[in-house]
Image (cartoon, rainbow, N blue to C red; front, side, top):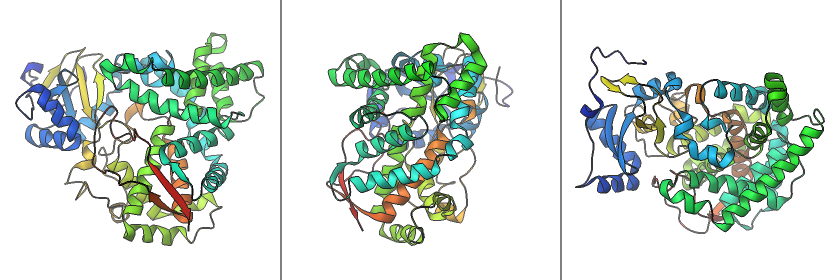
Length: 444
């Protein structure tokens, strides 16, 4: 049984309960209104383990750096199949975030061929050129920044990592489906009505119609393409041979072409929103970028202010809901308490990013903190998760996002049509940008 160093474990019912307000429902409303503050107060009052009302029942919460270390070191105790069942329902039985054990190991082994640093790095020049060209197409025009960047990333993927001639409208539909699918997955009781909406069904149908067309061509002509999708398909054949199923290839293709675009879009947009909201930092970043010719993508990796911008945005704007629901597939002990198998657990995985002792003025946009310290505090950063279930697409995101931000800041001024709220809300899916955000990227 995985355990911390506590000699005697207390029963789960002895774990203290944290509430704000007179009732459990009022406490959940307080969490929705101020998720980071709610769990900061709970953590300060009760330590790294407590219980609180979440999604209509009491959950065990693990919070702080000690919790991150424990959760990420003990990936095998969690049942991702149970916790992420809605994602498997929408994206197929082989979806990575819903796999455990040997199935998960196999899937990661296959995807390594597509998402490892070397295969992602090979397309750096194309990513840079495609982002520059797509920005030029909308220069000065009113544009929905959420839809624009998700389309730009999906289009870049279709020209590089999973090469296919896909109509622009279908690329937009693919990006929009990823956006909406993630929101539906977090709706709990409202999910069943959400996924039968006509618009959602249309987006999903168009997305998978084209994914199946592409897959038909790939399966009929193995080895005909030289891209990361082909590398993954080759890896799957090497691992499974004739036992490889069509749904496995289809999900591999989805992950390479479509998945992750929503999180990368949010990272790019929030980096731009914060930067243009802070003139002093904008000037400092532009001084670095103005010395760049806009063509050599390798130079971007050496830009310390750009890297600090990305790091601080990741710190302030986690890539998924502030808390992640988990399901204990087996019993464990943590911080003096014995947790039985089958327990639903909330992991406040990004709480460490807002701890004052590690990040002074944690709610302020201060990218210079990453110039002063050089790197984040170990076990505090949960943007991509950790352990064996760390986000498989992190290499791709960390190559695409800085290039997109660099081109946008270097070449354009950002004007938003309406004031943007910067508070951290949960809503249906964490800090995700649900609505259109209209603005103009005006050439400098």
